[in-house]
Length: 360
Image (cartoon, rainbow, N blue to C red):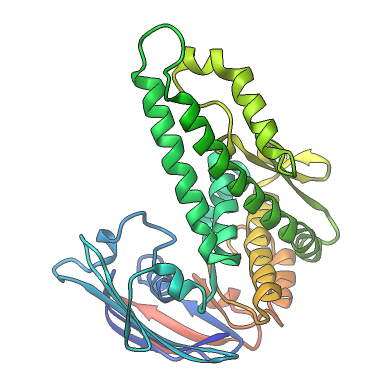
């Protein structure tokens, strides 16, 4: 899978940009603030229909413009896909796939796959458990886009159950709590299984890539669920809810479920959060994203497009060289770097200045 061409109009600081990346490695060079990260973000938007950097679309639209436009053609083993998106600062975006309107993001995500890494991803390793839960859910969507509905359903059940607990101010438990227990268990078990399967797909890929980049050091990845998934997961979930019922009524919050999960990451037999060096944490986060790419490739039979924003900045020279070598054979990859000294050998180079892109 590869991006044949992409266009950005009024996207961040890109007034009008068109690029035609070749297969293999493309490196975008530019000083900070010139628009290289915005370029990667816009091209990734074609695949994900959302930004990896912003939770809302309003910041994506250039100041003074009514909408931003993102267009591009993705070539897969089964044919060509023309994706067109009007990004609106408020309200629903307009999306088209091969000139036909699209209402659900998953209709595009099923056929066009990409993985994005950015400097903020170091929080997966060094941040709180919520960052790792978001990573696991993103991995699930990358592998099986339709399964995003499982997390959405669980989040809805969790919000409703928490609202009920928060508003209850009488002795005992509310009568309707059992009904929300049923919904929480039903949706939660699906999410637990999704996460367990996704992490299972990533474990070996992450360990192998990390060892390749860090000269043999191991990165252990293990799912730490609030409720162990498996054939009896529903029974265990219900038992844990019954066990924590007094605490939940006292704290007015749901204390059992996938929203309490974590992802254990260990380097050199130490928990990465708190013990890994900056370089180890950076390499760990990068390898997790690369592992998602490899897992997707195995799932669909062709590699997704990789967008790696400033991937070398947290790595020492040795890790940079090994990462460059590791990218060979991973399909099309678009990287951003601040200067030419970080450009891997054999890559096509683009320069970005003031939102304008030129082939070097």
